[in-house]
Image (cartoon, rainbow, N blue to C red; front, side, top):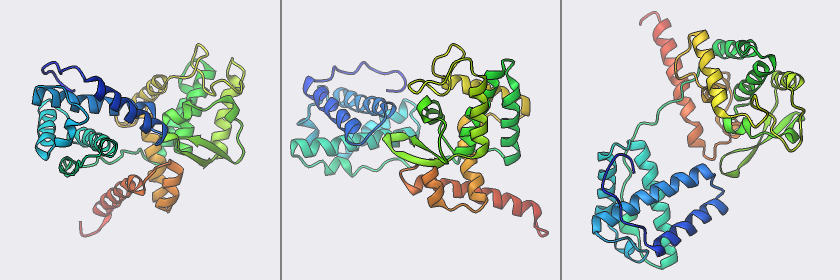
Length: 313
C-alpha cells in the first residue's frame, strides 16, 4: 500500500492460494503481462491487508461473501488518505472487482453488494505529442548525437520505430534478430500477448539497416535486434537517456519522452486524415475508447489554431 501505516495481518493460506490461482488465470487465460500481474498482486494484497486490519482477522475466501459497499468505500478512503491518486485507485478497485467476480463464481456466493461500489472519477490526461518538425529534428539529431557512430545509429533506429511505426518502447526493444529484415510489414507482439501487423516505412528500414551495418555484434536470429554497449539487450533507460539529451539540445519540454513519439505518431496520423479504427489497429489498442483520447488532442490543436487565427478573436 502507498504511504506508511500499520503492518497488515499475514495472508491466510486459503486466501493466498485463491489469489495465486486468480493471478495464474489472468496470466494464462487473459494473456496479462507480468507487469500487469505484479500490479494486480499489489492491488489485491493492499485490499486484503486492509480487510484484515479493518475486521481484526485475516480475510478468508468464504468471509468475502459478506463484503458490502461500506467495506470497499472504507478501503478507497484509506487508500486516498495514504496519497493514492484517483486514477490509481480506480485501477486498484477494478482489480479487486475482477477478483471478487472470479471468487464468487468459484465459491458460489453473491458479491453484488460489493461490486456495486463506484470507482472515483478522474480526468484522463491527454497525450502530449510533439510537433512534426520537432519529431523530424529528434530523429535527425539522434543519428549524430552520440560520439560512438553505431550507438548514435542505434538510438536513431529505435526512435524511428517509435515515431514511424507507433511502437511502444518495450515492443521495439523486444524485437529479435529473426524479426529483421521484414517484408512490407512487421509482426508486433504487444500488451496482453496481442499481435498486430504494422507497415514498415522505408525510412525505418534504412535507419535499422544503417545501425546493423555499424553494430559491432553480428545479427543473430535468437539474439536481440537492439543491443546495449556491452552486447546485451538494450535497456529502456538508455533510450530514455538519449531522449533526455535530445530534449536539452532541441529545447523540448520534459513531456518529450520516447513514449511521446508514439503519441505523436497517432496524433499526426489523425491530423492528416487517418481514421480511428486504422490508428487503433496500428497502435494495438484493445478498445477504441483508448484510441479516442487522440481526438481530444486534435480538437485541442484545432481550437488553439482557431483562437489564434480567427479575425474576430
